[in-house]
Length: 231
Image (cartoon, rainbow, N blue to C red; front, side, top):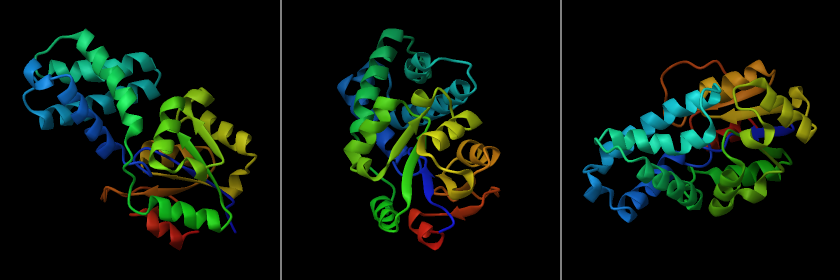
């Protein structure tokens, strides 16, 4: 085998973050009576939340904000779109979201199948994720995939973030893997693919969204089952 160590991203690659996030926000919308508070359209609220969340995550990756600020500010900005300036409510929503999100269980099609397939072929499976330690482990446990991975490297545990090379170096050190026998499998060109490329690792771009823009990666697939064609 050319590769021995397969490093997966979790959110948006295996675990369907967008669908699970929407479910969690819908639960919060109902339980905290956000419609009565003035958020009269959940669809718009959810769309705006995603936009704010993506921008804040970019700032977090670049060291411009701290994690605690990210957790509540994404809620506060989404509320402000409905002219609701209530930091107390935003903090309550942020805490509820962190509790609910890891309990959601939606995975991308063939996630369990491909992990079983790869394990049966004696690949060593690991995760490199920018998520938080407790949250990411809870997501894997809830969705039933925690038993597949030998090492789980989080941004919190490694004190670094993809695409920075330090998190990849930490992952290789922790797993005892050599670059030449390792490959990163993820969905985000700027984070997973470019990060691994700059760290000297091969990459598989998982293009779940049918992104038409060309991405320079060692391999590209549009579904997890297509990994059978590589490994």
